[in-house]
Image (cartoon, rainbow, N blue to C red; front, side):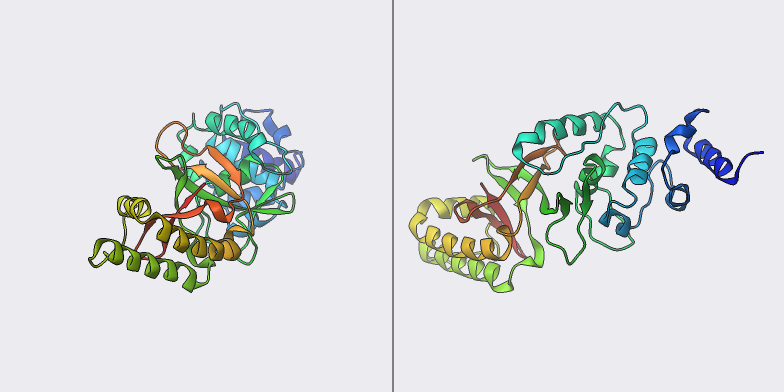
Length: 275
């Protein structure tokens, strides 16, 4: 007679369409948890489970079986992130991109608490020792006890990163002061009222034609942005451009004051230019 555990395991195998004999794949996994979150091909997992390593193997199993069956890839046991190990991560990301479910993992979100940005669950899945931070924890991804922010970025014509917003993590006067000062400089330089928002083209032109005055404004602003945000953790810059490389990691970097700038101003906040 089959045990209850064996019965429930074989039932789950049928749901996952795993061949007979695949019961060994469940060895050491929490069957009760798997059944509670199963929804294939895309499992719906509450955010709280991403905040620890407790159900890591189960979640990796669900994603692998449900979203990437037949894709020959590996997860990675890294204890830290740096530019020196990006090639290994990007090689696995490119393998996952062969599946039409890659976009679902890259943009994975949950309605059960927690704000998950693009690329965060992808890194959770690929990095065996990584988990996602909570709202009161510095960073988005925690690896080796260190927090990393994950930002979808694009590359400018100067080969710098843009398309980056940091939300309400800074004191409100830091970004507001920059916007006020740069609009005053625009009015002074061109003898006309500055528009409500400055496009990337307009701001690039102002930087060129009033470079000394702009640099004074940038340095003061960058110091405040560094102290209030960028000094706290490295940034994982994820490629958010369209095409084959979308979702790969461009760099893992801590940006100093000298490399913090603004790409454009927006109705709410700033689009940063880093590098």
